[in-house]
Image (cartoon, rainbow, N blue to C red):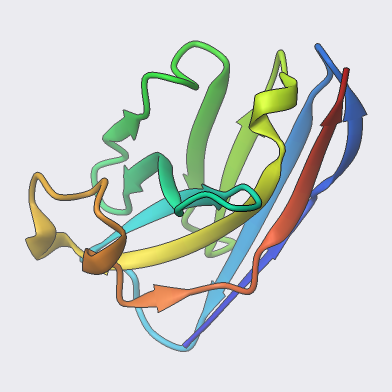
Length: 125
């Protein structure tokens, strides 16, 4: 299984980025796909998740209304549209996959089975 994250970069406050996560190696039909991030010196935290089958989405309060997660079944790719970026969004962003059996635990790092390598988002003030 491989999750290949891309799309990070350097933007100014208020700017936007589109992160992509190309998934391969198995069917993700019964999986939840998530984005997490880790800033220097901080723990990895949940950003957003989407259920592959239904498209149901979940967001951390800190990004609700600014970020949008989506998936393209035909391309086996998950996207994170990050708008109105703030300096506090600066972090390495990771995509991950968890079996749908996690139910309501889609925000927990420990429930995700597969992880990508991360892509760095830097927001300058």
